[in-house]
Length: 303
Image (spheres, rainbow, N blue to C red):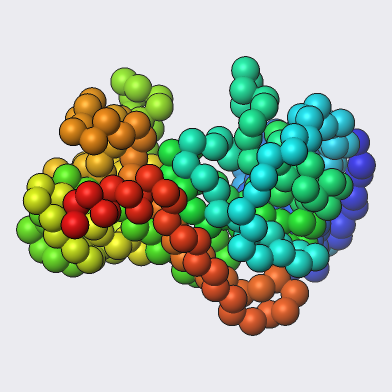
């Protein structure tokens, strides 16, 4: 445990905002976790609410737990690298690959591949199981993903994600034809109370807002190729939005039919474009991941 001491020079400011400004090695999300876990003392008293307002000359003690030695093993798994420098790595994740390990699933993930490729050059903000991971896409969603190679880059990209300023464009094949060729789905969503693996639409008091812009690109017999632009980035956001419109994504057995005529397992969804302000160059950069082979073959059949 490492202890940091700060004296507030602000009055009536949230503790999480203050610490994010003075302790730049961590993201605001991680700061909020430290607060909730009881690692913050103000004038000798433990504070666990992120919204706590500090006063000028308050003494703030921040305790940061020592990093846990990594137990995830590097694996020589080929990576489809779209771009790499000292700060970020942009990969085209294949369909079927899990982004980060979980209990009982510690091999074959993107993190295993990153540990082999990057060695020790990955951010550590997200802890033992998620080095370098600042955002993720589902196992069966393919496409572009930002990997952070140091904590400063991680914090910068995390802030852009929080501000919804990162440009993210997806393509998916949905069942049927949309009534409106373009529009947006503006809903609130949270974990399904009956199935924690699913998300569900809920009211504004119990969920987080999810805004998805969509546009039909091509129509086929019984299916459509649709472009999605994310304004927010929630778990299963596009998949739930299409279920909400009664046009689930083809192959999505969680939010759509259990079977399909093409015998496809997993949603036909691809994160094509990722654009953001580079954390050190301070200029907009954009990368596009080519469609995965299954997606391409399916389009050929539909056309």
